[in-house]
Length: 400
Image (cartoon, rainbow, N blue to C red; front, side):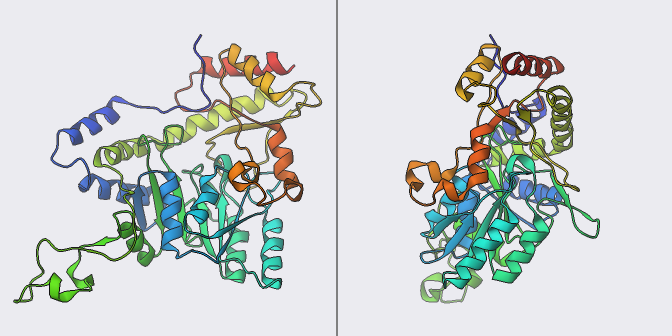
C-alpha cells in the first residue's frame, strides 16, 4: 500500500533540466549559479543580502559565527523546534537557555521570553542573543521581539526554516514578508526536501547588514580571503611591482566548507518560480483539513494570530489522546495501516539526552502540554485531492 508521507518534494521537468544543464557546464560548484540563486531568493523575500550554504543547520551555525557568539554568552531558545536551533549556539561554545512557548500559536512566548530576559539582567547574567522559530510556518511575534531586542541589546536570529513565503502585519497595517524586516540580524532558511522549496539539502541566510553578509561568505569557505585589499601579510601577498600575487589567498578566520553546489542552486532557482503555487496548494489542503476535521472530539488546530499569512510547512493538530483513551503510538500505527504517514514536531529539546538537565520541563508547561498532544498530518503540493480525502477519512476512522 502506498503511504502518504507527512512531507515530500515536488520535482518538475524544468527542475531536472536546470540541474542537467549545470552538470554539463564547466562549473559544478563555486560558479555563477550560486550568486544567481542568492539574488533571486533575496528578491523573493525582500532582503538585500542572501548567502547560500550547505543546509539549514549550516545557516544557523554561520549566523552564530558571524554574530560573534561564543563562550560566556547566553542564548534564549524555544524548546519546541529541531535541535539545530539550539545546537547553533552550542557549536560556538555559548550557553543555551530555554523559554516556554505561546500555547495558542506554538511560537516562543513573548511574555515568557521577556521574563527570562529580565531575570537574566537582574541576576547579572544577561543574554546576548535570542533564537526565535516560526514553527510550522507561523511567524513569531515580530514586533514584540523587535522591542525586546532593542530593550536588551540582543542579537536576533530568526529561524525561518518553516516559514518561507509567510507574512505578518504590523500595528500600522503593513504586511511584511518573512525576511523583509531588518529587525532580525539574521533570518535562516532550509531547503530540505520536505520544505517549501528544495535543493536536496541546502540553506540560506538573509540579512540587511552587508558586513554580516560578507562575514558569512568568508566563513562558509574556510574563512578564506582572496581580495587583495583585505590581505594582511603584504610581503607575501604582493610582487615587487605592487601587483597581487595570482596564487595568493589568506585564511583569516576559522571557517568551514559550508558551500552549496551550482547544480543545487540551479534547482533552487527553478523551485522559487513555483513557490506561489506551492503555497497556494498547501493553504488549500489546510482549509480542507480544518473544514473536515475540526468537529472531531479531542482534535484541535493551533491558533493563527490576526494578520498572519501562514505558509503551512507542517499540518499540526493537537489530539487529546488521554480523553480518547488512545496512545499516540497506536494512532500513528493505525493511520499508517490506512496509508497515511504522520510525525511529531517536536520532542522538546530539553528532553534530548544531550540537553538533559539543561531545563526542567516543569518550567515549560506549555511546551510539555503541546508535545503530549502533537501530531503532524501530511501536507505538500504534490498531494492530490484523493490523497487529501484519504487522510481525512483515515483520521476520522482512527479517532472517532
